[in-house]
Length: 229
Image (cartoon, rainbow, N blue to C red; front, side, top):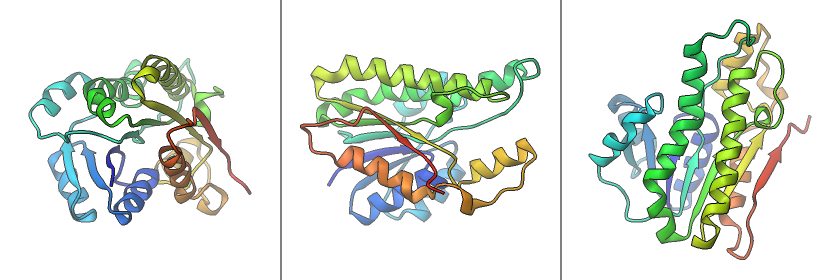
């Protein structure tokens, strides 16, 4: 049985991964932005441990995690939470850039820094759920794409640094996935949302589990997942 820390377990891809790991009898540590959210996660995933830390303020994560009980080892850290605010470069204010960079890039870097010793003990995995925007930046997606391009750089550097420690690092690049975040994105785009057109979160969860379940003689570095319809 493995021990896994997941961000973004409240909905979408994160919830799908958490449910499937729980069904396998794995030990879950779920990060919540506040106490109320932590209570909701504990009720949704009986037996799971919860940690409180706001990804929007990564500079406070060291203090927050330092005052809570942590696992003794981690077989995986799964960075799944994210935010998106669309807008042209000429219109997007600094706060929108800062929020996306904080949640999508700086917080994953800080959580990884703080918990990496626990992953080294297990010779485990760090999984970054990136986005197609982490490979290509389209109009009005500059702020989000910048955070996700940065996330790719973070993963690539970490992979090279931790190879000799037995830590595997995987970036997953899902296309549009039927999640509450995608519904919000459609609203920002002024488009009608049809979940049936997009990837089921369960399919991305399968990709994540494939990466962490892979025998230790191999490593999935980058995995692109695209809608099949």
